[in-house]
Length: 129
Length: 107
View 1: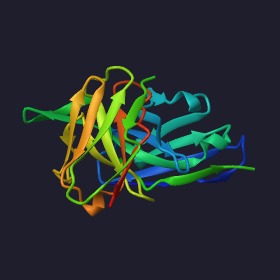
View 2: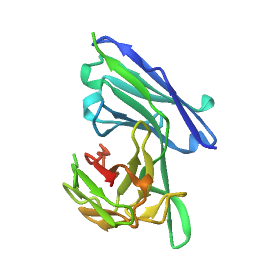
View 3: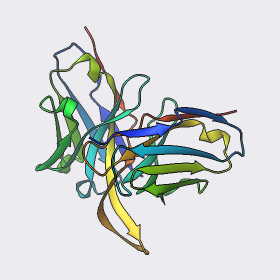
């Protein structure tokens, strides 16, 4: 069975740092993009970052230069290093697998269609003094 | 950035009803549109990807359509377990923005 399990969340002061981890199981990890999505208390979903490999990483503007996404394929893990944290970063952070398979005419193949097809349960991050 | 706007923000319907949620993109996204369901206290789950492809294990009561800038999620014959918040998301360009969500209450 496919699973994503996040850890590393907690309470941190403004300006502080946290490193979130996500361990994957049940699928060929290095075949997939991976990502993070967050949800502030009582709010909607916000895409944060995606990673394919060491060379392809993308971020929402609000976290660029502060957050770094990385992965260790040998450990089936993806990470989110969060620095210079702000109150507005307070949220539940979800690890996601990014699917890209698309079937057309009975033929399925990798594509440029991306969707978050597996989600972890989330890890809460609170930035407060 | 492409902005996604859902309507309505909330709705209430009865068991057996057919409902439609609309998602509009601020610019064309072809068919790069996904739908997610989130129940209270739970992680979101993928319902539909690439506008109309049903994710495995999802009830056939859910369907999606649209192209360009206007998309719809339809749930036929509502069931009590459909009570949730529904989000659209575009994957045409970074950042992969979500809509603000539509909260569905089952009367």
